[in-house]
Length: 372
Ligand SMILES: Cc1cc2nc3c(=O)[nH]c(=O)nc-3n(C[C@H](O)[C@H](O)[C@H](O)COP(=O)(O)OP(=O)(O)OC[C@H]3O[C@@H](n4cnc5c(N)ncnc54)[C@H](O)[C@@H]3O)c2cc1C
Image 1 (tube, rainbow, N blue to C red):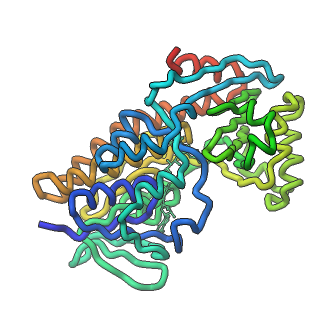
Image 2 (spheres, rainbow, N blue to C red; image 1 turned 135 degrees about the vertical axis):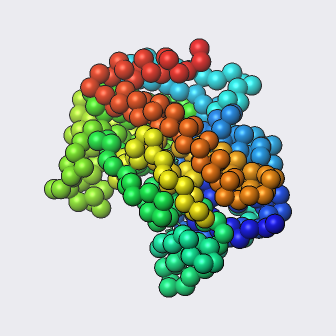
């Protein structure tokens, strides 16, 4: 029997869920708030791990296309001291496919493929347990019912309140994101500093990370510990004022490292929020969550990977399982909670060590996780 299924959100979780259902010929409504796929800049690069994001793409029948698009050389990682001394310079072997990078926009287009996303359909609320199923309320006042509504609508999920009263809390770490274009031509010194992959510089309660995307684009992330209201006297829309604040925060760091901030043309403010490490809920008939909506964690290379694998696994078990939709969702939730809980612990501890009073902690963490 074919159930009426909707997924809210067309991020990595929602699109992978929909794409795997589509592969099995199973219909799904994809409801996305953005008016078009390119309504917002897609964001930086993602590394997709072999047993997580890549496994999800395999389930979607997209692994070969991913391998053709992705950048294995992007796994390279260089670590510097605040004074510019190179502490580690790790490069992957040519055949290393453990964690290749892909631009978010490329991944989105790969997953979108033949999917018929309903753009501009912001959901405000879902009410489970109505006579005809779970009732979805849209921002334009319309309503629709489904047998299952999957909330894949990210950190500030509008679906989450149907299953859980928990909301994200601030980690104590704030991030500013910026980018540089055409680095090989316009900023060759910075292109060399970043290399094929990433460069990370760790100081006391501060870090600067720059990551190469495709097409000579570099994303830069300045992270530091601060109270949530640290910027009360700063106009976040004033690029020069933000730059001065950041340069003051990273005062004394090596000039080539600070050039990553000096050449930036815009800054996006992202205080880092998380859900509690082991976020679970009492199962609710007709509604579930995937990805950041279920387990928002520090951005340390796991969130999109988990989101995609969860999407693929839930879709596969709905399309190929024995048929009791509610039992399928219950079993999926147990599996998701266990795995996400493990990763939330790892990434929470990781953030503590990467933006820490003792920069040696970051290096020790790198040595622990990086293959030699
Ligand atoms: C700086 C940074 C770097 C990161 N790097 C990595 C990395 O290298 N590897 C990794 O695995 N993870 C990384 N992450 C984490 C990763 O971005 C997230 O975990 C991932 O995007 C979660 O996917 P998602 O589909 O659950 O949610 P999202 O990507 O947030 O997608 C949610 C979608 O839902 C839509 N939506 C929201 N509200 C509504 C609504 N009310 N109605 C309809 N649609 C709605 C949104 O428009 C969006 O399209 C990083 C995060 C950050 C901030």
